[in-house]
Structures are given as structure tokens and as C-alpha cells.
Length: 155
Image (cartoon, rainbow, N blue to C red):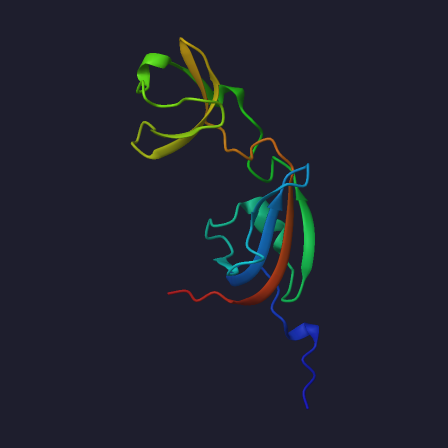
């Protein structure tokens, strides 16, 4: 009978496909995203589905590992950049649009790609839109449970 010790489990690293459950929580403990009650996520290390800072803390983990990491803004969604907020004339928006702080709107950037922005301030003359990622500036608690690690199939 063969003993399947920890040494035969493939660790997370380059050219691996990872299946995991994860959750993201803010400093105040509120959960932003979680798939612990849903289908697990599957990604190939380096495919861009996870930010490099999130992948970095996973490196070396093996199936069965359960960990919680603190991801600082520099390794996560970046610092909040004040220059990513812009003021628009209230007249640029439809009169029937109920503009209020927290409303997410979709804009087109210079290359016509979709760019989400969140309304932060509204008055009679101007509307302030924040184009920072909603998690920018936050330290994220990243909880993971590694389900499987296999070699990535390359073509």
C-alpha cells in the first residue's frame, strides 16, 4: 500500500492550474466577495484572473491548505488616486437619471473600452465621479482553501 504523503501534492507555482474557494473581506470584516458557498474558482497562475499580489501569497500552497492573508493596497487594488476622480457638468447627464452618491455608471474611455465610475458628490451644477477601483486603498483579508493543484495544460 502506497502512502500518499504531502510530498506528492503539487504546490502552487508557475504553470499550475489551481482550484480554490476564496473570500475577500475589508478591514471592518465585511465580506466583499466569496465563493465558499458556490462553485470553486479555477485559474492558471499568471493568466491574469488573480492579481499578482494575490497569486504571490498562494505560491507554495498545496491542496488542503487553508490560509488567511492580509493583502495591502500596493499588492492588491492599489492606493486610492485622487486624480482618478473627475467633475462633470450636471447637464451632461440625462435629467431623468437619479444621480446619487454610490451609483455606479459606465463610461467609455479614450479607446472606447468600458470604464466604471461611482458617483461620489452631486449638486445642482456638478457631479463628481470616482474612477478608482472600489477596493483601492483597502487592505484586503484574503481567505483561501486550496482544493486542487495540477499542471497547466499548454498548447
